[in-house]
Amino acid sequence: MSSPLADLIAGFQDLVAQLPGPLQPLGVMVAGAVPFIEGEGAAAIGVLGGVTPIVAAVAGATGNFVCVTLLVLLGAGVRTAVTAGRSKTARELSPRRQKFQRALSRYGVPGVSLLGPLLLPTHFTAVMLAGAGVARGRILAWQAVAIAGWTTVFTLLATGVLSAVWGR
Image 1 (cartoon, rainbow, N blue to C red):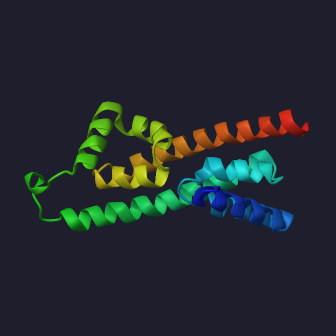
Image 2: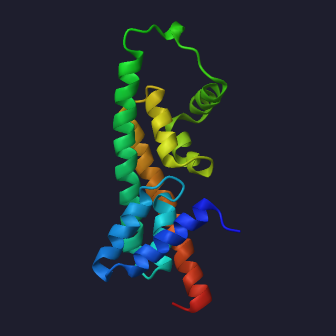
Image 3: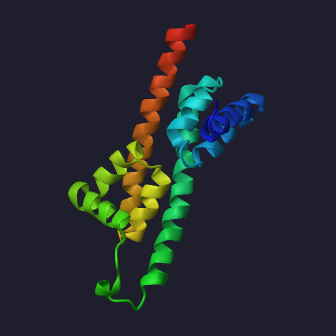
């Protein structure tokens, strides 16, 4: 029995395989913009679909980062609009928000950005950081590091799997 995420990944693999060679990185980039697939999943899809590993990694990370950037800018704007004129004491934090605030206090923006993908898509982490009032530039810098790092790791894993299984 397949899951919706597995179906989505298979759909992107089919899409990338059906695109003409020069357009395949664009398919990988689109996959990178999707939460739960992200740059790392998109790069693996591309590598397994025959895209050169470096091209797949750059395309997947770019798609992921462009989407995260848009969400951070939107999230920061929404936060500013919602909190304008409200005092800090008037804001109640939900239990989930309190948990996030504790993680942010404990690990800081670098830790939340680098470790966040183990629990949540970067899209969600970035929006939560924007909602917490972290500066957009700081969020984007650390999200770029996290996306590049995780995408590189998964690209190397996908390339290693291909080498081990098919000798390519």
